[in-house]
Amino acid sequence: MSTPEEKRELSRQSQARWHGRNREKKNALRKAQDAPDPVAARIAVNLAFPTNYVVPPPLRTVEEKRELQRLRDKRRHLDPVRRLRKREQKRAYLQTPAGRAQRRKAEKRRRKTPAGRERTRRRMFKKKYGITLEQRDQMFLDQGESCAICREDAYPKADRKRWHVDHCHQTGRVRGILCWRCNFALGLVSDNPDTLRTMIEYLKDTSPCVSPPTPSPEFDFVRPAKLTRVPAPSAAT
Image 1: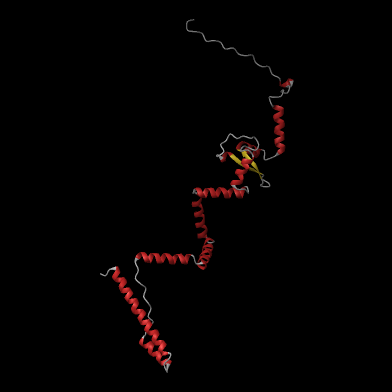
Image 2 (image 1 turned 180 degrees about the horizontal axis):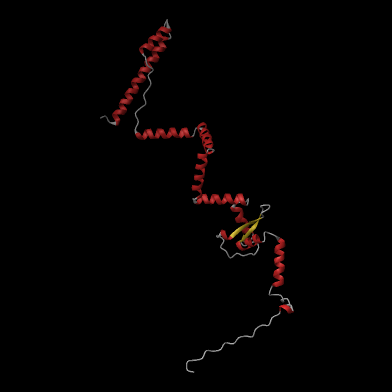
C-alpha cells in the first residue's frame, strides 16, 4: 500500500506526462500550418494524438479538499446573482401555506427569547402609542419621575409595570405617564371632563372639612343612650 507521499509523486509524474503529450500535439499542429497541405497534415496530427489530453486533478488530502470546498461555497454564497435568485425563491416560498406556517413557528420561537420579547415590546409601543421606549423614558424624566396627575413617586423607577402610558383614544396622542390608580380612574369616567367636575363638586359638598348640611325634621332621629358595661359577679359572692 503506497503512502500519501508516493501518491503525490505519482500524481506529479502523471501531470508531467500529460503536459508533455499536449505540448507535443501543439507543436505538431503549429508545424502542420506550414505544410504544403495543412488539412492533411492536421488530420495526420489528430490521428497521432487521438485524444485531447486533460491534466488530471492532483491528489489532495482530506483537509485540503475541505478547505477548497469551503472556498467554493464562499464564492457561491457571495455571488450576487445567486443571492438574488435565492432571495426571490425564499420570498415566493413564504407566500405559500407551508411557508406561512413555518414563519409563524419561527416567530413564536423568537418571542420566547429575551431579545424577542424586547423586540415585541418595542414593536407594540411603536404600533399602539407611536413612540419608542426611549421617548417614554424621556417623557417620564421630564415630568419629574412621578405621576402626571397625583405626583405620586412611591413606586420604584425600575418597576415600569406600575406606570402606564396615557393616550387619547380618539386621536391616539400620548398625554403623559400615569400611575395605575389615575389611569384606572380616567378609564372609569371614560375621559369625560364633565364627569370629573361633577365628582369634584360632589366631594366639595360632602367633604367632612365643611359644615354638614342641616337634616330635615322628617329624617331626624334620636341617638340612643350610651350603654354601660356591667361587671360579671365574682366567685366569692
